[in-house]
View 1 (cartoon, rainbow, N blue to C red):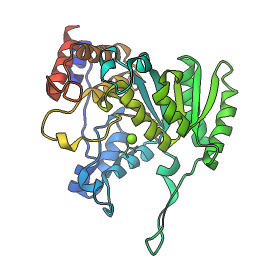
View 2 (view 1 turned 60 degrees about the vertical axis):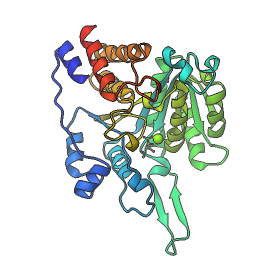
View 3 (view 1 turned 120 degrees about the vertical axis):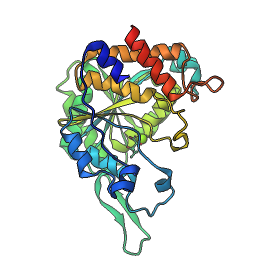
View 4 (view 1 turned 180 degrees about the vertical axis):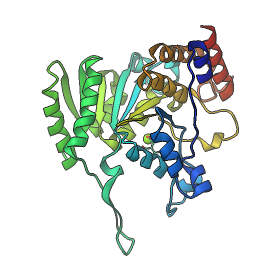
Length: 332
Ligand code: IPM
Ligand code: MG
């Protein structure tokens, strides 16, 4: 697909591949080898495959885990904001577990803080006797400011409505989020900002998802709410994301790995393909290239040329879908 974009628009993309996650642990013992990190740092953009391996999921005492590779990469590259657009495709509306009247027209920009909070807070660990475990949720004003600002900028290009999701009735970090967001909002006079507790947000995403436009939230709430939001569109396999970095940005589908599909050529490639569209747009400012990739994806859905998660009866393979999209790009 990238090859057909470079052919059509006369670009040359230089690819370099690096190991991360389970395969990197198997080969080097380190989920994020220095060689991979250096490659990422010197790249203009990073395209990330999905991470996770059941052999580690089922072993709580594993010392190194594939996910540490992704978390280290987020931290090392300063990927402070994860941007996950949740849009519905008209041709998929019947695949949504929710009623058509509820999901039709949903268009939410979910922005998740990605390098702070309980994912990275110290201390984290176990007591000496092993019977107590602890994680810490830590946020500084600066970490909140930069992601809320980015979210406000997105909101300004959309309906100028932003919802800050927190748990300020319980958590001190959430109260700092609220205080900080309120002071940032003063810089955006035209913007209307509202606040919602995360439990309520989880409910409203199902009951009335159209009430949302831009949502900004902390790391773990964002992790959970974006998975929830992704099924509004009919398949977790569909959603792309961009992780905005201090210099290099990273693009990845929001789903994890799909080990049951390994070697079977059945996984839905659209989340990854749409992540490439986001990469063209945000990392390279290639708007037409991004647009044609998105159109090609919509057309493949309209043609019902899709993998088995979207069409059990007559599925196409991963590579068939990829080839169809590549071909559409060349011909249109
Ligand atoms: C995601 C994933 C990751 C996360 C995992 C794989 C560590 O669920 O990108 O949403 O929790 O951030
Ligand atoms: Mg997640």
